[in-house]
Image (cartoon, rainbow, N blue to C red; front, side, top):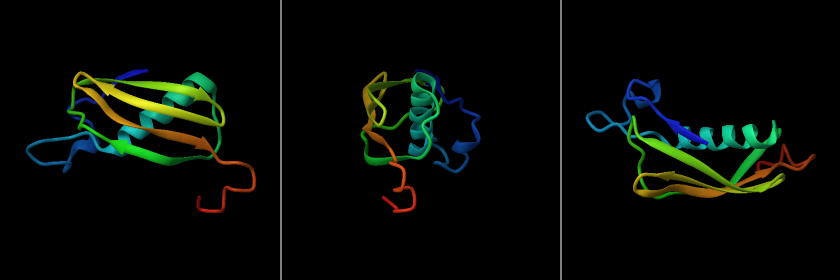
Length: 101
């Protein structure tokens, strides 16, 4: 899934003045959207491992690449300069939702 966060997106206000960077949480939202687009709504998910390697600047294209299927996916968020973020998403097993895992 390809995406662009426009320079006037509300998440950029104050993150950071004079040099706006797309917050990591916005990248993770796009990862979850990619999972839902490819595999449908999954219910509760957790992110046991995430690394942010490079910043994404506003108005730059990025792409979410998924590997795997429910209940576990590996992902990379790719930009023009390489890997921006990578990690893992797991579906929360029934009965684990309240465990804080």
